[in-house]
Amino acid sequence: MRFSLSLLSLLTVSLASPIGKLFARDEASTTASLDAATSTDSSASVAYGNPFALFKPKVFIISMFYLERDPWLEELDMVYNITIPGLSPVYPEIHCVANYSICQVTTGEAEINAAATITALTLSPLFDLTETYFMVAGIAGISPKMGTIGSATFARFAVQVGLAYEVDARQMPANWTTGYFPFGTTYSDQYPENIYGTEVFELNVNLRDHALYLAQQVELNNGTEANAEFRALYPYAPANELPKAIAGDTATSDVYWFGSLLAESFENYITLVTNGTAVYCSTQQEDNATLEAMVRAAKHGLVDFSRIVVLRTASDFDRPPPIYENDTTYFFNDAYQGGISASLKNLVIAGLPFVEDVINNWDHLYATNYFTPANYIGDFFGTLGGTPDFGTDSDHSA
Ligand SMILES: *[C@@H]1O[C@H](CO)[C@@H](O)[C@H](O)[C@H]1NC(C)=O
Ligand SMILES: *[C@@H]1O[C@H](CO)[C@@H](O)[C@H](O)[C@H]1NC(C)=O
Ligand SMILES: *[C@@H]1O[C@H](CO)[C@@H](O)[C@H](O)[C@H]1NC(C)=O
Ligand SMILES: *[C@@H]1O[C@H](CO)[C@@H](O)[C@H](O)[C@H]1NC(C)=O
Ligand SMILES: *[C@@H]1O[C@H](CO)[C@@H](O)[C@H](O)[C@H]1NC(C)=O
Ligand SMILES: *[C@@H]1O[C@H](CO)[C@@H](O)[C@H](O)[C@H]1NC(C)=O
Ligand SMILES: *[C@@H]1O[C@H](CO)[C@@H](O)[C@H](O)[C@H]1NC(C)=O
Image (cartoon, rainbow, N blue to C red; front, side, top):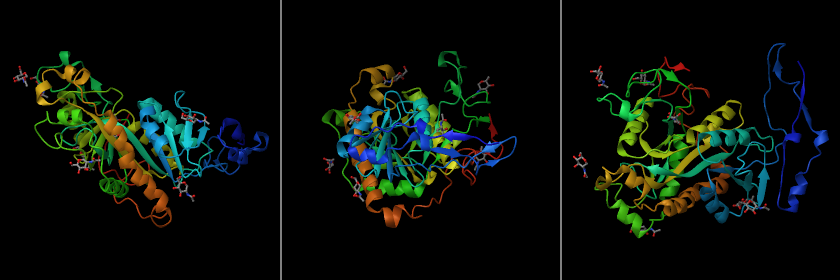
């Protein structure tokens, strides 16, 4: 079987400066043949490379919406806008600094947008991402047991908590604590019988710890007086303290939940599905989807899964302080937490040291195997090799 593919007809590059002209290519001359593919009459596969890549960034910042993107565009002089197929219609452009060493992409919010955008990016023939470090940098909800408004959290595990059965809590049996229960089970707190594969992603702890260390050397923004007053409503630490950079795992769901009961139910689920290794800290709507796309790309050598950091800074609490415990929707809709400003400032304050470190210490740290992971990395299925330190030998894929 033999066929050819016109690659560059898929690309659009819109560059703001004349330097862009250096990269202009003649579409007609660029076809790639699949001769080298490992093919038989009935199956074809190709080592999908990126022979036409123009850009090989050292760091890629992944934002989810404009409020997370803008502080980076302000901080770093991103002079190039690059359009590739498959990005969000709301965020069609990748932004890069003048020498293309640092780039930024905005996925659009929630799991579908994150998966589609990162898939498009990792498959783009314009980018060689094989040695790139990625930093997901977004805002998040925070468990008051783990942090507070403005906290900067660096994850080892990202756990997708929305993959479950759900019955409205008004119709659940009286002795249940939550309407959610894992696939293939009959009530909550049972280990799931059916695994989709995106439930748990584990990241490089050595790299995470280094990014965290760098963030701990800088002073975070403490937020406003109103943030301090809201924190003080919690009668315990670290909720009622100033924000810090911390290690903490992150929960993904398209549904934006709040309140102590749902928070506790997802807390339990995360513990269950990671064999007690992950600790629920922050909440967001994308990270599992981003990481699933990364696993698929890493499987074919397009990205290095050991070079991903997930930073989430806290904009609001996931559950109320005791005085609003009986009025959870008032807490969510009306009580003023005001944490967005501190969380956005701390994205750059806590994330920039890592970005700069990658650039400044590329040759002797980041281009080498200095941060080789000592822990398992990847998904539930061991897609990237190794044996997950969560899950069971008999997990059924569904
Ligand atoms: C590049 O994108 C940014 C952010 O969307 C926008 O503000 C800027 O005007 C764009 N620049 C060009 C040259 O299109
Ligand atoms: C490339 O740009 C980055 C960010 O502006 C800068 O820190 C770095 O020194 C530049 N590298 C080179 C080789 O010019
Ligand atoms: C999201 O990914 C994390 C690990 O990366 C996993 O533990 C979690 O179960 C996933 N959540 C869902 C809803 O898939
Ligand atoms: C709830 O009660 C039912 C009926 O008594 C019992 O079969 C079930 O095991 C209980 N479930 C839990 C989670 O305790
Ligand atoms: C935050 O508050 C702490 C404790 O008062 C202080 O040491 C630190 O300088 C403050 N950070 C900033 C950025 O103002
Ligand atoms: C919330 O309601 C429960 C049950 O009515 C009651 O026991 C508890 O004291 C209330 N808590 C607050 C803070 O009002
Ligand atoms: C995780 O927990 C499950 C259920 O308790 C158990 O069957 C499995 O062996 C554990 N996996 C690991 C890697 O410890």
